[in-house]
Each structure stands twice: as structure tokens, then as C-alpha cells.
Length: 474
Image (tube, rainbow, N blue to C red; front, side, top):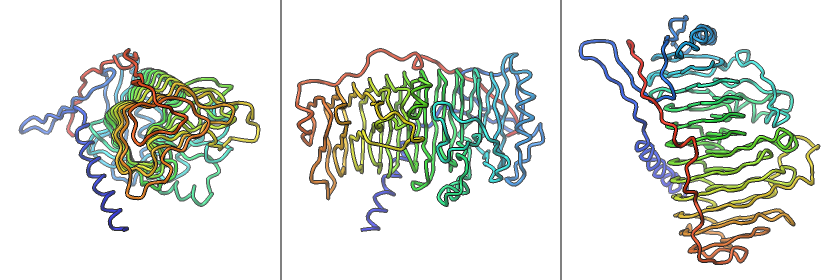
């Protein structure tokens, strides 16, 4: 049985890698015959007038020497010229060990395909940063948190990209501290961008993040595309992409293997998120693939106390993953999750297809408002095919505060060899279903309907990237 299970996981992983190849970005490299100089073209929000290479500032790519000061010096110097047509820093081939460093506006960080940025395991190279006001405390420990590997705040027009270069957080060091209950502050994330607008994160491979991989927060007009994210499936809290209190965000053409949710949509935690009151809205997720045996393909929550609305998900594949699009919330969260639209999902080897949780728990402190009931309504799923499923749905609202206006249509679920006896387990939910197999619970009566999906486009969908280039002896 164990060999059979491993064989099945291996086969599905190969399928996902094949899918990843189909999602590869249009990044080209041209090398002149007989010359060492090459030109790399890549898509970006804006091209840059000024350019430098990390080695210009003393960078040493031997995988052992700290380059934190080289990154700091490079970005500080380039920030002086960035207002004049923008600036870019090229990370060339090599292994570049570094602690946390901060970005600047009108700036591109370009990671060459043969470059690896390595997160330092020297804790002194990870400075503390202020607690997030919508969370009130750290996620790992209440007292504080560490800066992400790549960090930026109050930025405009920032691009983190490459031609599939690698950022390795060397997270095993941090995972052990977390498992041994030795973290006194919250672990660093891989990339965190705060209070910023016009952000692009693309064309990179991220591996072994200490915790969350990509965390845009309190930001707007964000494009995240062509990312490959890998972490062991038992690594703690290694979420793939976590848009948090963000507006007008596009996530597409990416693949995540994670120890937690592949995408987790957030907006603050209990009374702190309610007070900060900044929702995540106008979010499109498309052409996305996920493997996460113990978590969701896409989670809405559980930290959703600023609200989540107008979420559009389409063309998603999940393999050997706990659930599809999951809603996680509970008493004390307040706010809402509403106007969610999901279509064209292909799922294989799943515990659940549909999962909604109204008693998630996990509070920052004992001060949460026990009368802050979240409103969950307008949740729409259509055109879903799933195979090898243990349970079709676990839908649990909140007593006297049911989840309403749920619509599920055109769904075909094939069960695993040993499925759960009750396929649709529902409480405190209200909605309708049509052309769904197996037959849904009585709380979702049949109605001749095709669940809606918006016909308009979000503003971020119409943002076109420019074709930019770098040249050098790479």
C-alpha cells in the first residue's frame, strides 16, 4: 500500500511538472556567436534607464560569503538614480548568500537563471520589523517579527523578476526552531511588499521559505505570474502566495508545492483586522497549479477580518491536495467573504472538493469580540471535475449566522476506492445546486441554474507588460 501511494504521488507530480512546462514564461536569451555578451529579454511593468550588477558593489557568489552589505550598497546607490528613468540590479550567475535587504521605488531586481539567492542562517542578518497593525501580534510569537528576505515598504513601481532564477530561503533552520518551540519572534517571509502600488513578482523559482513565500500586504495593482514555489509538504506554514489587504491583484501561470495553502487570501486577524478595516478585493487567480496534501489549493481566510470580496478564480489544477477553494473563518473574525466566483477546476486525489469552516478558531489573544460574526455570502462554483475524492463536501456555517447564497453547478466528482459514507456533510448553510454528482445535501436544493461568473474585467487584467532587456557577460 505504501509503495502504491508513493507511486501515485510521483505520477501526479510528473503531471504537475508537465503542466508547469506549459506555463513557462516568454523570457528569451540571445547570445552573439563568438562573443561572451548575451542579451536577455523579459516582460516588466517598466524598463529601466540605469543598470548595475551585484558584483559592482563587492558581491561574491561563492555561497559562503555574506552579500547583505553588497545588496544594501547596490540598492542605496541605484535609488539615487531611479527617479531618472528607473534602475535595475542584476544578480548574475553564482550563489549569493544574504540576509534581509530592502528595495526602492522605480526599481527592478533581476535574478539570472544561473543565480541563486540564499537566505542567511545567521539571525543577526534578519532585523526586526514592526508588527502588522491588522494582526496585532506576530503569527509565530506575540512579541515581534523579522524582516523578510526581500522587503519593501511605501514603494511605487517595483519589479522582482528574472529568467527563472532561484531564491532559496534555506528554511530548514527556521522550521526546526519553530517545531522545537524556540521562536520568540515570527519567522521571516521570503518576499514581503507593504503599502506599495504597481508591483510585479514574476519569472522566479522560490524554494524552502522560512515561512510564507510571497506576501503583498496593504498594497494595490499587483501582478504575480510565472512563479514556481517548492517547499516540503510537511514544512510549517510555507504558504505559496498570500495577498493580504490588497486591491486589484492578478495571480496567474504559477505552480506551488507547499506545506500549507498554495494561495491564502487574507485581510487581518480578529479585532485588529476589524479596526484596520482594509479588505482584499478585486482579485483574479487563473491558470494555477497546486500540490498540498494537508492544505487548500486556495484558502479564503482564516485571517479575513478586513473583508474579502470580488474574487475570481478560473482554470486551476490541484493534485494530491486537501481541498479546492476553502473558506476558513470563525466567531471573532467579523467582516465578510462575499462575491466569490470559481470555475474550471480540475482536481485529482483530494480529501474534499468543497470545504467551508465556520469554527476555525486561532485567535491573536483573548480580547476578540465574541459577537463579531463573519458574513459569508455569494459563493459560486461551476464547471469542476474531480477524481479520486474522499469526501465531496464539508460545509459548516455558524449557528444563527449561516453561510448564504451558495451556488454550485456542473460538478462531476468521482470517488476514491474508500470514500466517506456521508459525501455531503452540511450545517448552517443555504444555497442551490444544479447538475452536481454525487447529489448534494438537502440544504443545497436543486435549481435549474448556471452559477454566475462576472463578464466584466478587473482593471489589473488589462495591464500590459513591456518587453525589456539586459545585456552583459553572463
